[in-house]
Image 1 (tube, rainbow, N blue to C red):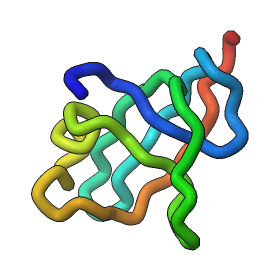
Image 2 (cartoon, rainbow, N blue to C red; image 1 turned 90 degrees about the vertical axis):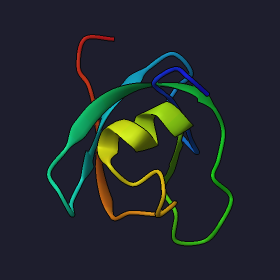
Image 3 (tube, helix red, strand yellow; image 1 turned 90 degrees about the horizontal axis):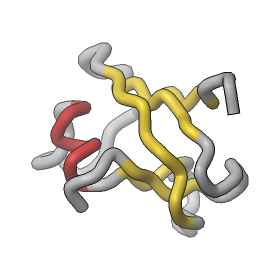
Length: 72
């Protein structure tokens, strides 16, 4: 919960992705450590700490852009 981690359906475990909140422009690099989300229309599930850094912890959901970080 306190780490910058996320769940993604297809990115390899241990890979990193930059998640950008399209509403406020904030971005953070997360490490993929789980599979999911399995809810239609959702592409990534970030940890509480990552959501707080991105500025949508209280809202729960946000429109984001996900980019794999090179160098893996």
